[in-house]
Image 1 (cartoon, protein in one colour):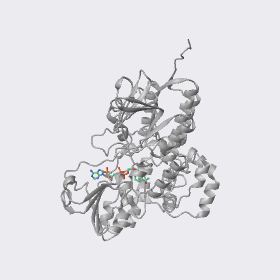
Image 2: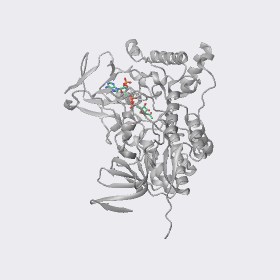
Image 3: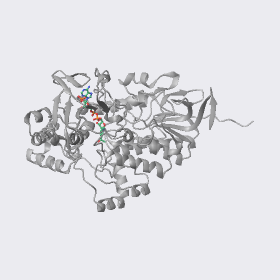
Image 4: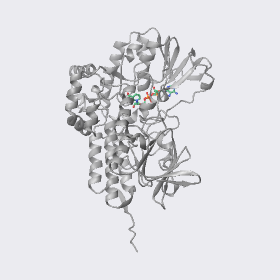
Length: 547
Ligand code: N01
């Protein structure tokens, strides 16, 4: 229904969802199926979320494609065919467009529109959501599907405006192809985005200079086209794939081997790690059950990967610069195609900007403490303000006008119940929010679980005439405490990374992700629902008696 207020239209819906990526699309589908009127608001001109924006060369997924999709519809699963083990960004974007078409989702998505603010109106028990188009959406439920890593981190380096060449951030890549042919290109950053794009850019550019602040561990993806027979069998085993996405620790079918790193002899360990290396992808992560908690054991795995870097990279000085010294797997475990091999090319050089920091961007390139590097193009592969960045970009206000940013002390202290809800913000849900398992695994699996939990919850509220759902302070305190306790027992918290917020100058350090694994988390959420939403306060709507 559309009303008018101060010449701006007001749309009234049951639910407003921000974002038309994996989470927003499925949320819309589920709510529509359940009979809730729903509006999705999306800043981009199309569906896809991170896959809409991250169009940089070499962008692909690091979960195997047969798991990197929805599993809610057998028909959908069987209709779509992935071409390779790790699909490239254009293929994933085609998949999400295919989903949007198949379920006719676009008609409820407003594209090219940003949400500026969302405020809970206590008197009316509704969320008033202000769009940058001037429109207002009034909704009973406010649901964020803004992604965990979607707000680009463009470092504040002096002089970028005076650079005469072109510059791009990997997370906001142009739709047109950027042609590097014959150009001197500089890439700043060696996280997943840098490591995926560097080998591709190197093949095109006249010269590529990589500006590395922190070397990263990476293992070969061993990407390959899928054999049609394998795909046929996968589709036949749809139920089993769905079960694996729901019941395995990170939603990609694999289980941790039930053995400590320290239980193996050096020879056994070498054999296990070599086999995992040869299989490619995330196999090393699953080779032992204590990689992320066992300091001594982690070092042994890190030594193994460091030895591989030394073997691959021919120039010993470059190889030494590329050797990471953090705990393996505590920054995102990266998988690559020919990343370290790329440093054997004559047209590639590596600059250590920890030793000689970047001082400024000049008209002609990048000046570090060591000198000036002349460039035609600069690529910022400098990552994102993760977990809270995209939530804080929207002015979200709950009860008594308190903003989410204030409540979470500007990110210093996120407080949620189950990573889905936060006290003081009634009828608001965050899909893959802070303190949920989200990024520590296969995102579509995490997203399906969240979306299904939220839509089941809304149906329960409707059936029981509940007007307001809100977590109790005690349940929230216990959940946030539990998340911190689990994280503090791991090596994640000892490494500077976007997980800990260390990549953003001035951001408080924390670890806002539930590390207990997808399957246990699902069980906890299910138990909460089964116990009549234990830990939440549910307020039944007042009945109006007919006179
Ligand atoms: O970002 P990052 P990303 N001067 O933060 C460096 C997902 N993802 O876009 O480590 C110089 O990992 C920074 O250095 P340091 C995935 O979850 C997935 O690569 O902070 N350097 C680092 O090297 C991933 O983890 C895929 O010292 C600066 C790099 O920039 C997440 O997105 C593909 C700097 C940033 O690395 C983020 O990955 C791509 C400065 N001022 C991304 N500021 C898949 O495969 C930052 N850096 C699905």
